[in-house]
Amino acid sequence: VLGNEHTATATSYNNIGIVYGKKGDCESALDYYNKSLQIRLKVLGNEHTDTAKSYHNIGLVYQREGDYESALDYHNQSLEIKLKVLGNEHTDTAGSYNNIGLVYKTKGDYESAL
Picture 1 (cartoon, one colour):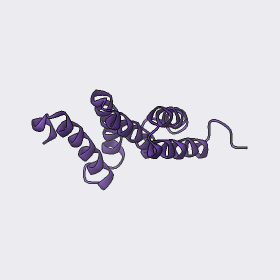
Picture 2 (cartoon, helix red, strand yellow; picture 1 turned 90 degrees about the horizontal axis):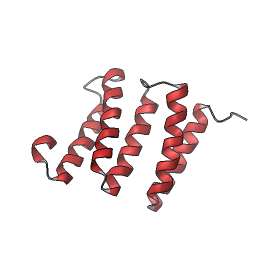
Picture 3 (cartoon, one colour; picture 1 turned 180 degrees about the vertical axis):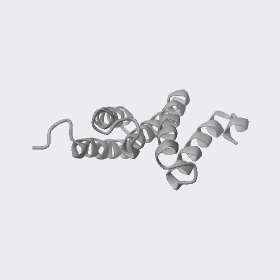
Picture 4 (cartoon, helix red, strand yellow; picture 1 turned 45 degrees about the horizontal axis):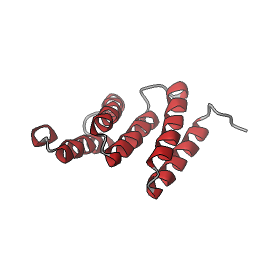
């Protein structure tokens, strides 16, 4: 009824991605997170917190898979949006900083993790 370009469809794709992620099926999780991201970019644009959530979720999958460069790329895109929309002192922004720090820590790059 709502179609393939509705925010509710993007949320459904995101939720399916969460389930696949919890099952450990990273490939399927990425597929659904990317579907969600594409809708959110088209409908909401690149300066919306839901778009930031999509980048965040994709970053977490890459982090789990050990693809740290891709994880950093997506976490940084999420952070960029959160800084613009929510500001530097919001808890969601802090969460992005935390995710980026954890990736650097896992890589053994403690200086960047700080």
